[in-house]
Image 1 (tube, rainbow, N blue to C red):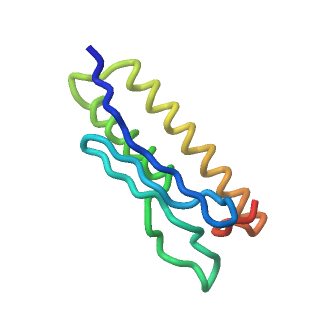
Image 2: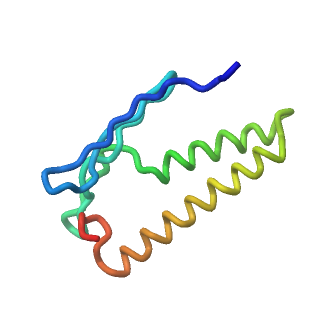
Length: 108
């Protein structure tokens, strides 16, 4: 018997074809993604949605919780490691974008 659920999602593009907001939902899950760039310096705005990095951190934290219980397992530990690796790569991408002065914009 499968425990997978049907998850609905919609990924949006702005008028220039840039990835922007959207959502993901399923039983017990409702995510609204960040819609638009945050901007830079004095023009920086507050986030209006979730970032992939934050959702991954939530998943890793849940698995860490399992690891502190009788459900501790090698598979959970490996999943945590891979999620942490994904977060590392996404943070590296952000650092590189920041160094190029394009973080917070739709510039590539």
